[in-house]
Length: 317
Image (cartoon, rainbow, N blue to C red; front, side):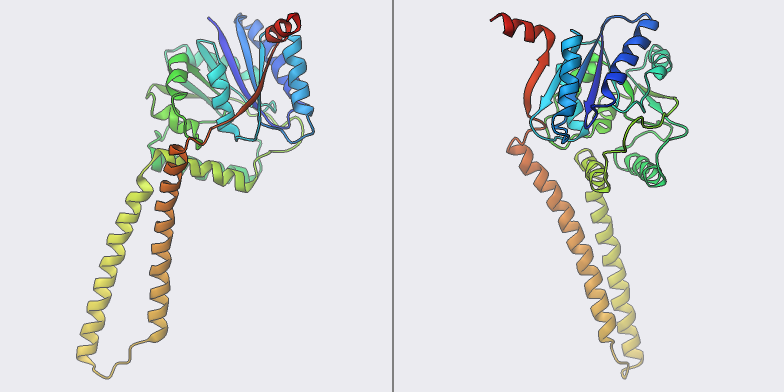
């Protein structure tokens, strides 16, 4: 049985060799010696250092294939690029920074072999800062509310899937990829297992607050709950307005000299106008994403594929 490791790479020149070689050693130790690595360079802005490190790995090991993207596509789209090139019956998703540590593979495989289609590794204790940990909790809560993730299921960027999951997932062509949403709509036979979270070997996280918000926003492509929320808010505020109007009318009838307040009127107008604009913007976001998908905005663009066998063939020609 062949295993494919799909690893998105971004500014990972100092860590990716360690990730690959430690994973190789762990797989050999586990007696799973038929494997490949799909390393996706997500247009790392480091002056070519990452693609140079990846090219060296591809030249050194014939089971390493490098997918070099022409522009930054984001982590989830980069993983989608790797999935399209994965040839294994079992595919493993990992990070490039040694936080999804190869030493935890045995735990993932042990759970996977119980017959699950997808197994996530999750971290009881994360080596992130307070901001990232709070963001993760918020993300888990909203994903559960918006796309129906089981409450007991805990997820991360460290996972194992079967090939039929991969075959179904790569049929999705929207540029707004959200892997967890794709996995959840493909199968219910999913498990998670606790693993150790290691500190980042080099540097710091490449996820800024803006990138995290943008990634979270991709959930919209897998849920219509926000649109339903706008309907419920419409009912709620309409009801409040009717009750408020009736109350003012009764008070005015009981006390004709009562002065109607201009400031309160302006506040109410601004509030409800803001709510209206908010949901108009939400609807516009959905329409905009549909527009981009109809116009076939690509998930990613491949500049080149680097592989030892291909290199030898080209040199022979």
